Length: 126
Picture 1 (cartoon, helix red, strand yellow):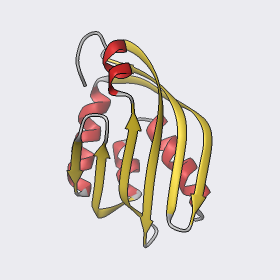
Picture 2 (cartoon, rainbow, N blue to C red):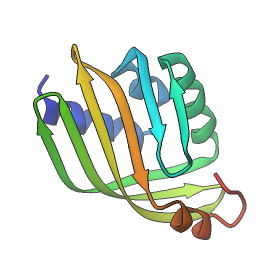
Picture 3 (cartoon, rainbow, N blue to C red):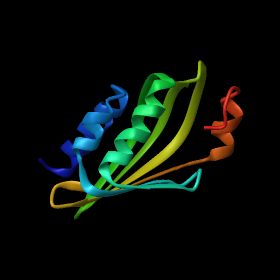
């Protein structure tokens, strides 16, 4: 599978709110960084737990993908995310950076403006 195909399947997994499918793309030692919150998670099983908990509060996810940049072992996905989180509609510009090693995501860093998220999420902070 080439990097563009991987990116598109990764996006579909997020839009389906499928924590198992997302983590299937990841190495056992994956590092996830939510740069906006400062949260880091090491390991596939902990990422699965975090995503599963997150998706319990999410009823809809769609990504308007502006561009996918794929080169060597790196993927950048520039997007506008539309999320219904805790019954609040959130629209936020974001970029996901994926580092691929041995056909698996070794690092997943997600960048977005925390203030925009918090302002649109009236019930909770995250």
